Length: 396
Image 1 (cartoon, rainbow, N blue to C red):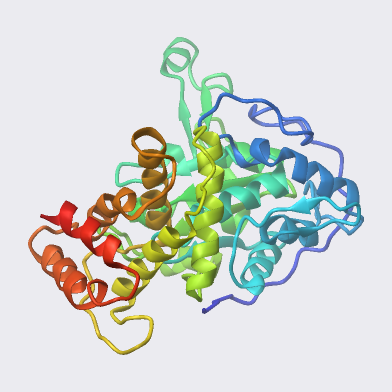
Image 2 (tube, rainbow, N blue to C red):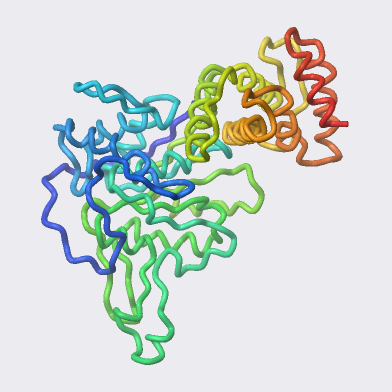
């Protein structure tokens, strides 16, 4: 685990001033209360965990930075889990080094933006969403980075019907999520920052250094109010990555999210997330599924690390990342198979096809790696005969 943090001067914590008049309307949201019924396939973090956020706010008597709904201590507790004095259990949202979360939360309390860096599947987006939910009560001020993300997505655009009819005006301006966050003193999120073209990335330099967003067409600017900050995520494993300029990187504190340190930690993460996803999909509870989860995690870790867990056999690694997020997907798919086409008990045959799809991304090279692993490791492992047969069947 490595944490890279640039030196910053902390912003003093003061009582939050009166809410300013917003330069652009944002998402209206009341303070978190009890979790509400929703038909959304994946509720936003602030909705799914509203009861926990409300309980933390009720017990939180520590200083809060301006416009933060919780203190930094309470935000860290929300992510890492804990038990409140009244017995309320806060479920962990992130299983990993506590110091990583503390540094991330502390960064957002300063005037420096936060860059969450890590290989795919290290929960960068997940942590980003929950940080925004706990701090601002709204995780939806989001820009999704792609190769086609335009400058308007980070600054502002125009309603061209209004623009043609009446010329440049506030009514014709379409604010970006970043502009809205600046005006309201909230957290904005930029996912996959390094996928955005370099010249568009640099749009953020003035926003992060001067805390202003000029609107030259109107001769105006939007000044960020206290409470505004930005969380970006990035990885350097995927293709199509654009390196950050040194000028932009200096505007961020970089926190590296590591892979789970131990098999037990990764099994715990996968089990928790599969249970949450299963509830949202109305899948049955996972009876006696721990063995299959452990097998999936073991296979992924060994192929990812290029060596068996006992350190005795070196292995070739496939081209894919085999991340924790992919393990969660494999087990969730297996649970659905067991529920709809089996007896509801997760078995080796339910996860075998998902593992094959995750490992064999390149049919030419990855299939050789997978077959070699099956024959030299899985076949000889005690208690894995059913898993070996299931994998051989789907690999045929």
